Amino acid sequence: MPSDRSYQVVLDGVEAELRRGELAPGDRLPGERALATKYGISRASVREALRVLDTIGLLKSAVGSGPASGSTLISEPATGMARAMRLHMAARNLPLDDIVRTRMLLEGWAARAAAERVAAHGTDFPELAEASALLADMDGDDVDRVRFHILDSQFHLAVSALAGSVVISTMMDSMRETIRGYVIDAFTDLADWTEVAAELRAQHRGILGAVLDGDGDAAEERARSHIAWFVERAIH
Amino acid sequence: MPSDRSYQVVLDGVEAELRRGELAPGDRLPGERALATKYGISRASVREALRVLDTIGLLKSAVGSGPASGSTLISEPATGMARAMRLHMAARNLPLDDIVRTRMLLEGWAARAAAERVAAHGTDFPELAEASALLADMDGDDVDRVRFHILDSQFHLAVSALAGSVVISTMMDSMRETIRGYVIDAFTDLADWTEVAAELRAQHRGILGAVLDGDGDAAEERARSHIAWFVERAIH
Image (cartoon, rainbow over all chains, first blue to last red; front, side, top):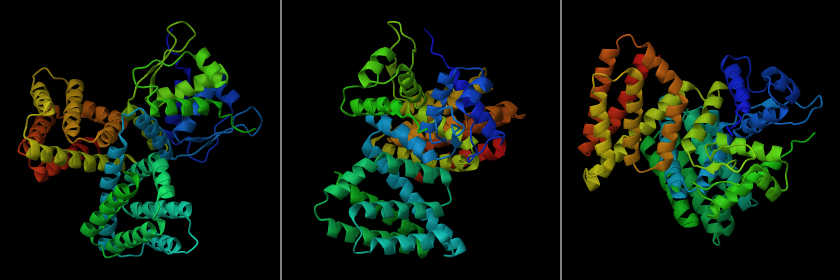
């Protein structure tokens, strides 16, 4: 029995409307009943399409038939890509080590690009102020491991945002999200937390310092060795 | 009405079984009825989960209730990630230009890594023989644009395979797949096809030559300017 691809009609329709600008993130999709009528397919097939859009980070769903049953379009590419990567990593087709090495490559590239941007345009970027503020927050005495990890991720996001590539930030973010479980376990298991936290603070300050100096070589090198140090220390 | 997340139970279950090695690509999943019983959810919810797994490149589906109704697990991460990227590109959250620039960065990195591998271990890799054979095929008089494009993609895959990172190959592959429609249109529209094809052949030979020489700098530079040349010529 051939696979029934009715749900694909909705995906293609949504893609086409997004491309033509008739739909945009923030808009509500019609409810299931209206979509079923519009595309001439069953409500079950509509619901399959909504699950797919939800999984790939394009929809915040509110399933049902009431007046508030529509779903809102969003666009969170890293969320969607991380979900796919995690399952393929589980299927052993994307090795954890390889994900970590790729993250090193892209973090290094992003830190270099951020430094080069500073060298060209100065330090008056909101991302730099945000990165500094995050490092100050990480210095607090009452910062536990979970909070530290959140601030740490936000610091890396701020630096990579300065690099100016949404695609690379998205890929780094999806890799970070894919391996998040391992990193959180590592944070939890570390026996010598105080020492590790001090070292991580120093490394982050080193990266930000090189970016502020506009020194691309140093920024790239420090970002890479920061990831390598943590992986060596905590995951392997 | 809150969203019904029953289908998520199947996704989590499949991920856990993959992780424990109880499932692997090539295995068949039980049919819908059996999965519904196993997870204690409706067949409609099972079907939603199967659509999601299908979309992210983890399943070849055969929906139905007959004896051949099970689906086969596969693992095609680039397919799954490209589907997510294409929709987010349509939602204008991943700009085409940025995807092209990221592809340049990664193609350049992969060509450098391939050359460095040759410098360290010599030229006795099947990927190099394959890349040479593909270039010979591209020289044929009867190669039309569509066939040329296929050989071209395979050439890039062979070089990036030599770089030794499945994750980066997957990302490059998913970007190539995401922008494929644009590239095929560009191939079709080119007025001066004979001239462009001659230039592309020469550029590919240049990249492979640098890889065979183990010259990382030249390989990276040639791979980047190859993509830049084509984009400038054909897409913008």
